[in-house]
Length: 467
Image (cartoon, rainbow, N blue to C red; front, side, top):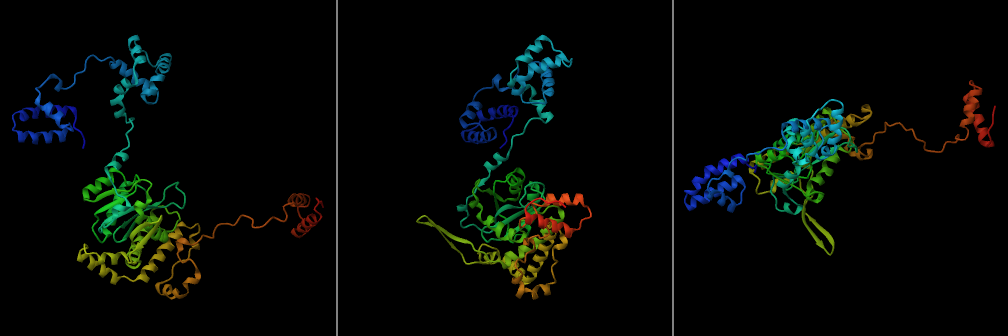
């Protein structure tokens, strides 16, 4: 809670003191509770303040004669600006040199008393004089709030996810930078429901906190169950006031994992590889065109994965004689897991069944391949080299022999358009190139056949020859 100012606190003491002294015992307890909550005082200290009579010390602080007057302040401001607004501790060391230089060049003329005070001022006094100046000038550094915010967010470990209900999500970023972190590229905001394994993904053209909030809003609209909570890692795009304010306003519980503990977010880490990387691959994507193409692809992927892709879910994890033994539930799709839950509303289950009967998995797979082809064309050096997807009927007719063609995902095929510039075997003419250049200078009209013949003779003789 933000503390009240000193002036407000003094006014509050004056207003409550008379009321507190004349109140009954039960009313005094209520007044004390309100007073300590507003001021942050210890209860005993609050009782002493409200019981004592008004003194002169309760009023605003009155300053006596200041040692450093306005003339000293103006001189310090000039020197501080001349030193490019460095901190007071560094400025203290360099003041004599700046003072002499400014006086020698006629930029500053000080009285002896003022000059003596400027030379003797301490860094702390300079901070007090320059405090308001730095604020208005915008040169005062603002302390990072991320650590304070992270301390206010509850930590959730992998053991805290036992017996969770649908609606609690883990969120993370998947970077589409192609192995390079330079420049701008697309980030996929991925969310998975820990209870059912339901996966949602939204592409973001930049790693920015306001875009994260917009992405979460879209995920919440697409999620079949209400969003009850989110759990993120310690990324600055998640741990900030924008996201925490959004969660408070919408009534969403916000937790975070421990730093450098990947197991705390094992569910989302598994989906990053098994879903996003499997569909998108590791190529680099950037720009609005790639973002829109990826967004359309994710709309198809979410239906195909959540309704037709069963996954394992860990049931139990034990350590037996130094070895980890894991047991899993039977594989099931996220939609089936939601159907089996007793705490999911029947209306939600009805919508899931209607959607399932309306979907064709092969048609979804065909749309996924078309989206992957479009992405591959955007990432390839030669877009014309990427084969376009056939019609749905041709796509289905090729299914029996599709395995013979190897990799069928366009986003995972190797790009063979790169120029082959390196040698695969040793140069047989490496010892004859200097002679060949000399022959060309002597006989510019020599044919390639005769030049090759001379090189062969030079190699056999292993001695320099000349025509």
